[in-house]
Image 1 (cartoon, rainbow over the protein chains, first blue to last red):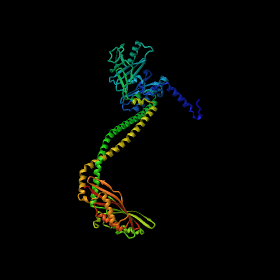
Image 2: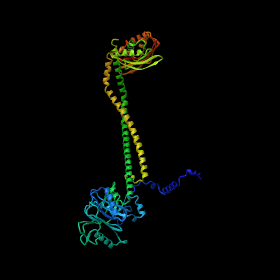
Image 3: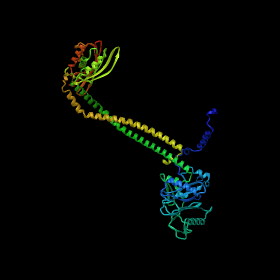
Image 4: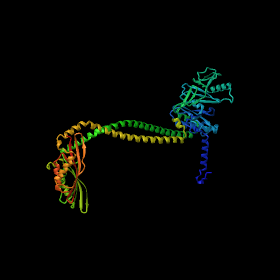
Length: 430
Length: 171
């Protein structure tokens, strides 16, 4: 039985509970499951189209994205029976377009579980919105079938937002006849007139009725499959595919389509910016590691080269030392043959100029300054130092006089003087 | 890699980044340090090699200069280490100097010439005798010369310390 810990050492109840939860959670997992290094698939939630009402809102062609978002909010307040805060809404707008397509759904149409499942999604948008960025050039009506509904997205100008989006539910147990009837109804609502040959289309056409359009030409495109998110897309692009049609969005464009709470999206954007910063720091670290590796390789390679160079220096050293000695000795012999150290002559010349009260204590000359004499002297009469100084300054054989520190001890002034004689000062002495 | 990093939760991102940051920093610091040391050694070797190659290139010139320097010297009058000591001792005796101490002779040698140098001290010498010794020694110039000289006076007695050197030419 382990000894009981005093109460003050016990963990708080909440922390203890959390530890137990974590222990229970991880003890059930195998090691491979605990350390998950796989990259999770990017999750895009496509919501049922029939939950949303859609409108085209006129926008000035010169407006900027922030202004468009504000206009959409205002438009929503005007057209919806609910305040924008009680709706999930998004919009689609191309830069320079005359309209934005706004879509909104009452929040209570989605259960709490559904909303909770959106938390790890990259984007949440109605299914039709995934095809709004289609690359098609011809004006068209896009018919999107799902298990429970049919949606018609009508473009009269592919450079603009769709002029209308019509989404209708299928009966609970749909039959071929009910599907055909719904298609007819949606097409008629989209402006098509029956019993006239239809334009070329892709995918499967349900041949129950043939339509023509009353006004301008518009192709009916009816893909056989529902739009789905393409996981294999490279880079930061989000691509949706629906049979032969595809639509690609940037991260920013997808954020605009996202119907979730705008504050939550702003928080996500900030988190993304933070993550991007962390990623860039990580890249910087990798660059630093690459630099360090390069330096190490250079040093390893250089060390091999350096070893060869050092061997060469060592091999040459005895020859070089001999040459150096010969050079030094030659210089010394040269110097000696032309001049020699004359310490006593220098002392005598200084002695002849000094006042009698000054006594030299010591003097020294060191090669290679053959003509520089350093003298330490003392006197009981300090004023004689000045006299000596002025006497030396007038001497023609004196090249330089350097007076060093002086001190007064027991009535005696001590001083040091360094005198450099001219090279020709000793000619008369010789 | 980017997708893997961005898909981690924040604490994993920070932990991963911290570890890599620390590792990268330590590695870079170590690599920089070793590179700096290597560069210093490399520069020193480069300087040595340059100096050596300059000197090796001067070999002929140095030998010619050495020959020119000893051209006017009579090899018979030069002093080897033994003769230097004997000569200085003889001069000291001749001039009546006492308290003379001659130390071991050191030799610097090249192909044609050598220089022998010897520390010497003279204790409690009178000025006239010291001067006489100096004058006698000067007569042996340039074969014998003074390299260092230091004199200290106390009670009219002179303590001298000097380094005397001689030239020796290979015969």
